[in-house]
Length: 167
Image 1: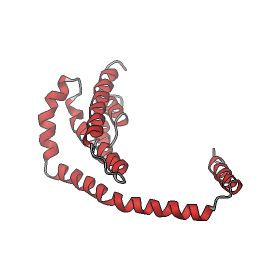
Image 2: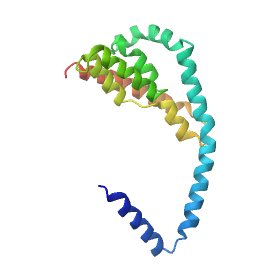
Image 3: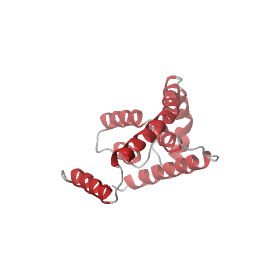
Image 4: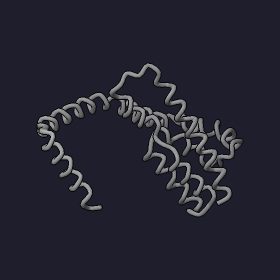
């Protein structure tokens, strides 16, 4: 495996030479495009990070946790996981910290910790990924893919909690 990257690099370099591609010019053009993309991406990521911090600092996350815990319980999601489920779409590191807290509090082999681990692993930081994917585009219907991903993340959470009951 250690040789995979160097061999792949040499193969691409050799193929480019065979096709008579100006390698440095193409590399420079790609790097230039990447820098333009990063400049477009920075405001999107800054907005996501600020919203995550405001969500936590304003205590909105605590109030939303209290409000949604009964609803999540109805769907089989333990109330202890409500905050994890709410934080995960916004912040991977914040949800990882909360997951660590759950594991420390309930123990690694508990139903809550198993459920939290599977929920953490089966969902994604939706808003961060959306910012990265859609930064270079001007999509007209951005809400539809985000809603679909949020619904699927909720359904995977429900399913994972259901499956963890039998494990």
